[in-house]
Amino acid sequence: MSKIRKIFRKNVMRKITEMQLKIDQVPISDIEIDLHSRDKIPQLLLGLQAIDSNRKLRDDVFEF
Image 1: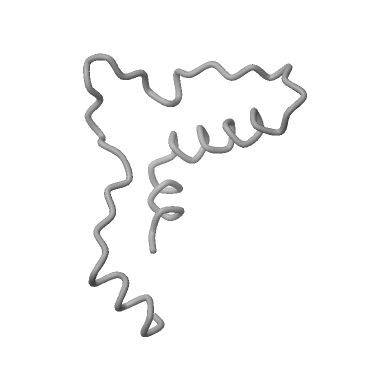
Image 2: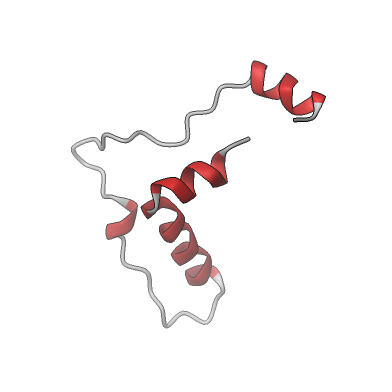
């Protein structure tokens, strides 16, 4: 691990998401995405949903 990463890892705390949802929250995996949009945003959102639904992948992505 590089020296810079060690410094940041020591001084920065990250809280990615709460595992326990609040009463009014909807799980990311339950959000319906409009696939008929001509934008690229739905593809990005589907990718983020896939990352969020796979705990190991999510941990790997957000590891610093």
